[in-house]
Length: 328
Image (cartoon, rainbow, N blue to C red; front, side, top):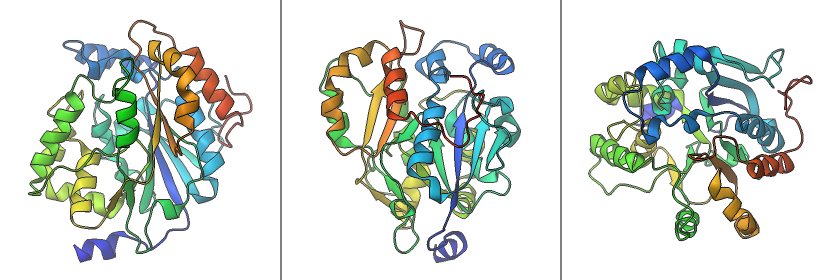
């Protein structure tokens, strides 16, 4: 383990790359592939989960430019079939589009699958920050929030206080459980690690530091699980949850700090959002560091206008990576 630390960790990098995964739900090749492989509808392949029409990525980049700007080396945007968001300035040298299918060397509709190959992006910094496109910063973030004084990465646990408050209201549910699949998959994943301890709390839906050397070593320890993960199409209760496993393994071996200090506000789209709008002041009175936009649209197929207005009001300034001829 000491060898991994010496190989993989710089005590405090000055700048790091940021990696996003993003799905263009309008990409015709992707739509055709997805429809061909769906055997039966489920929460994991619900169309709303892949819908990018709210432009969460645009607001996430704005939040990043506002609160993490000085720490960014480059941004890598991993997309289905190399699709490019229409608001992106393609002339920027500090934003690189990566074809996710080429990186994976295959097809998948499961984010866990793509997360297992992000470290293979060419020229990526040794440590990199991974964002989902629905994650946004609401306060300044520094490298001291991501690494301790010895250089160990810091990951944040899911906020128990917030989720208890949310779940105590009948109109709000945990948007990440996908009919129980996520919790079952997490339990199955933890059992495969064989760490002989009680399962830790879920990882928070917030940005996560990954280290290329750590990832390579971890993949070498669980090759069968990773091989199976890279060949699945959709998430299920049997999915090997790559990020959870990575965090649990390295925190168990004291090579990663898994702490509670950051909180995430979950904005839920569709019918639910109109009911919590009046409670946003209560939510925002808590010291939140991140926002996650969850999408549970079942009846209403269009993005919730109140969510769109909230994001535009909160992040009005275009990011440096947006085109001056962008479409709003």
